[in-house]
Length: 298
Image (tube, rainbow, N blue to C red):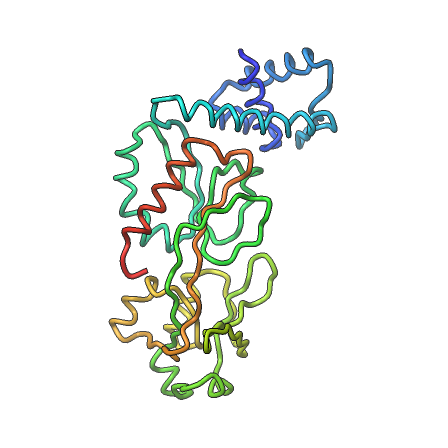
């Protein structure tokens, strides 16, 4: 086994905090992973990992070695990608925002897999910002303004947003013609998974951003429920237009304050620093950009 392979094994153990999970990720026998670490520690004459019955963690020497390994492996991957003529292959674990996955990306997945037949996709869904490294995920697709500086983020699209409510709700509370007329209205609160607080409604007024926090009887933390509660007449919401086009056409939702549209919602792919040069991640990100560039009504 070459030293780069030992580095790959070691870095994945540190990231996954587990010999077993690292072996599964790398599709290697558990014994191979264990023996590689024994050889590595013997050659370096240093203890790199602390092992307990519950978790594996790097020692101080192990953390320093891990950081150097990450840089070396990234440089190696970049060099090989420049000169290699082989197509990316292997397991790619991604986590996607559910509505974007279902409505935008899923219809184009057959074309991606036909282009890269050696890649095996494992897709999870969620709105929270998962711990990519600890959970062994290669990249995530999320909508919204992101603040996790430990991840590499690439913006891949900006989604048109609209302010909407159900006709039944507007019949009861009135159709506002200005921000001042929102005083007698209610919203459905969408709760931030990072802060636990509701996002304000946002409006573009004369080139400036205005934020409004309305009272709410219902708070949610999922995109599908957010839309469903608006259709049920529980308050005003702001959502990407693609998500509620059918509800608008069918008259189940109605646009509110169309002249004061909310700002576009950024969509980004995030991935760990240690995997930013992975050929599988690179082609997946490029493909996502293509899909959004070709999509209409976003």
